[in-house]
Amino acid sequence: MKIAVCAKQIPDPANEITYSDGSIVRPEEQVLDDTDRYGIEVALQLKEKFDAEVTIISMGPAGTQKGLQQALQMGADKAIFVDDDSLKGANSLMTANVLSEMAKSLSADIVIFGTESTDGYSGTVPQQVSRYLDLECISYVKAVELNDNVTLTRQTVEGSEKLNMPDKCVISVTAGGVEPRYPNFKDIMAAKSKPIEQVSLGDLNMSSNQNLEFIDIENVENSKSGDKIIDEGEAYQEIVNKLKELKVIWKL
Picture 1: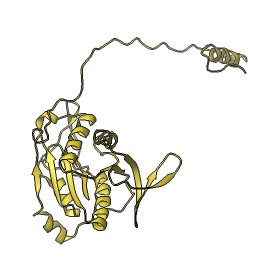
Picture 2: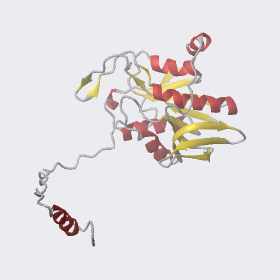
Picture 3: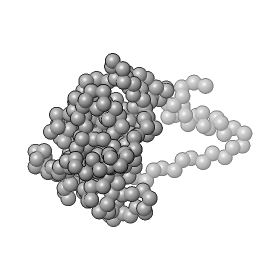
């Protein structure tokens, strides 16, 4: 089994975040997004059960690679990243496209995410990656049971549900779903010898086209303000008549 875990390097939340032209200014040294630690933990549990290979995949300015090192310290086997100036400010769809191609290059069976990044909060990339890879997406996983089968418990609107993990799928893991392990000194030292490889868009047979097409800009009419109703004891009837006019209600 080959597992790819999408991990993002972000500015240290302990420091003040600054912006330029609407984008986050990313310092040379960034850290591993804490939400990704939950996805990495699930990957490592699967690694221990199936003797799987776990690869961290990441997109964005690499800098000192501190965040990638932190992911390897947890127990991942290696990391690959794309750092291309043309991807600055990439939308979630372009991000998903790049990560999908990275997962394909690894022949990954399982692709794992945290639920959303703490510097973007789009929460859409796991689902977009699943569409690019044409794989089932199991979102909001909050518990993993490793028996004869791998049982995932996912959070739903009504509560939760359990299902068996397919052989190939995309998973997003909620914060608090599992308890991420913390590396000891031996883990930290071992990570220094683990490979971190930079790949280019060319290596992935991709361009920096953001999959967007500018069509047109149209003026939008100012919204009409609502009608004022002075209540002199019969205001409810005015409201009822208006709702009937809008066909919100038919009878009363």
